[in-house]
Amino acid sequence: MEVERDQFVSSLTIPIIDLSNLDKELVARAVVNASQEWGVFQVVNHEIPKELIQSLKKVGTHFFELSSEAEKEAVATPADSKDIQGYVTTTHKDVEDNVDRVDHLFHNLSPPSWIDYRYWPENPPEYRPVNEEYARFVKKLAEKILGWLSEGLGLDREALFNRGFGGDKAVYTMKINYYPPCPQPNLVLGLHPHTDVNGLKLLVPNEIPGLQVFKDDQWLELEYKPSAIVFLIGDPILRMSNGKYKNVLHRTSLNKEKTRMSWAVLLKPTYDMVIEPLMKLTGDGVEASKFKPLTYGELVYRRVNNLPLD
Image (cartoon, rainbow, N blue to C red; front, side):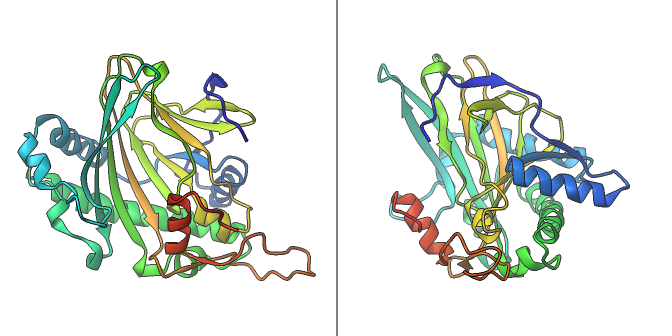
């Protein structure tokens, strides 16, 4: 599908789900329906304290805006490293060859064997305890959502998390995105249209709009809800669900005058996990498998190198 830049309308229809609703069957159905029809939704009243989300934003903003270049370079990804952790800068050119800079900070949150504190900023001092506390809450929320998605496939509640992501071996990675003001935002995209190679993304944006998702041949802009968590379904869950849950196509726009930031927790399997439909499928039955089995490492390699997946 060819995706054009000018196919854009602002919309408020991206699902917003209130997790405090006492009718949990209704909530579970809303999560499943949003994942089937959209591949993206927001949750509110999710039990992650608002004060903790505010602290997460505060310490992340401090690192990008108040740290010295030397402090940033101290947690930078080494040039010869294959590790996807650390502080990195990417640049984008517009049609007039003007260069715009976008900064990112990656570091693993879980499991403990995957954490390397060399990539965690020491300034501000609160950065580490705030992120560790946030990780405890966000893991519980992710597993709750995955439980409902599993049941929506007719599987036991733990299926997606345990059989799809590896249970306690599942990897949670923090990715902070920092998009400075762009003089010509209509000519440059912060992130070009893509689906996520990670399984599930839990996103907290700041108040500057920019996340857009593609549905029904148009771009829809996400409505900002303070303290909401945005869920985006990625490629592995598309394959684990045999196509029942969508991997949402999305992009990020830049702002002419204000800095846009977002805090994304990426949930992914270990590289040796086999990604395949989790339901019992037969070629001559009601439903055949739409995807061939791939290890997560192979899936990432093929996506990065623009190779066919099936």
